[in-house]
Image 1 (cartoon, rainbow, N blue to C red):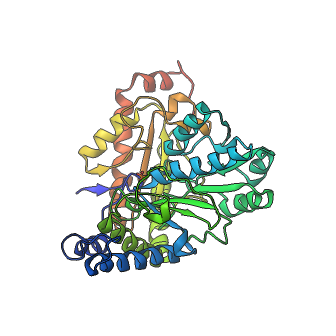
Image 2 (cartoon, rainbow, N blue to C red; image 1 turned 90 degrees about the vertical axis):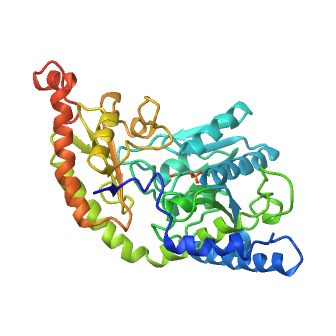
Image 3 (cartoon, rainbow, N blue to C red; image 1 turned 120 degrees about the vertical axis):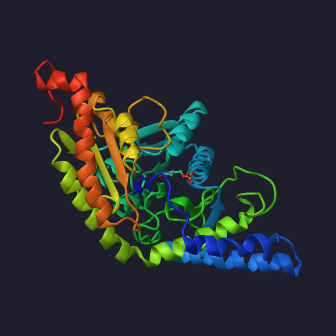
Length: 396
Ligand SMILES: *Cc1c(COP(=O)(O)O)cnc(C)c1O
């Protein structure tokens, strides 16, 4: 048996997406900027795909800017708002301590360029409040960027309320919704979102393509200069197969949100219940306000990396948190941001499910994971110290 439970890192490209992509390689292969019929066939498809994406987000087609993925969309959103703000003397940016590195590292660069950054503290359950955002906003604040749902611990933020605060104070609001789009119903207008990032490979679309939604009137700045594609805001011949795959995957995901949510939350909650029985374990993120497919635990006295290797040998593909930091031995900045101490932040496990997972797989994981945790603990000198009272448990 092989169980894929790492859908927050990436998802399998769906048959729907693949079928939508193939014709744009060998049949409708034109450049949408060409004036002849081969090019215009591609251009028509592009127009239709853009409208389908807009329909899923609740915005207009001309507010959709196609990018190479979530990271590029995040970079472009932050830089656009920062440079626009700077022109008006506003050089203060607000975000949170547990954003994706596409946000945090861009903010680091902007700091070097003379911007001031406030990173809001995150509550233990993995959210910031609209009141805290309001309190951080100053006269010179150019942008607030708060992620919709966290990619490690799955907590979902009060985005519409934070958006309302920003709108009232006249500050641009961006959300990295890469983990949320296709999984949670999205209405950018009703949620007061000025800019939003999404990425196709997180909802069964292809890798290397995403979108920056920018409300009409938001002054976007191009990061990639060249031709006039994406209304001059993102140059480069459109990646037609990827765009068509993204639009098809998004349409399918959005249509199935109610059905998928029901199946996913049932699996998620059963897994959470089963794994909570492991002694000295703690669930990270909010028990209720979390992504339908996200399960994230810390287990005291073990190393997340060893756990992942043993689980892989038993056919379970999981993650210790973020795919982007794996390979480094630093504990996750997300777990540190919600106040987990270093000792336990190393012993983390993320299971991120998709609608293709089954209850049988959940049962197998509930049976297997506690055995592997126990096996590792029996070999761990830290665990022996804890049991014999030479160290005190962090997780009761
Ligand atoms: C995956 C992810 C990204 C990066 O998206 P890519 O398309 O892989 O560049 C950004 N933010 C979050 C929250 C993510 O989960």
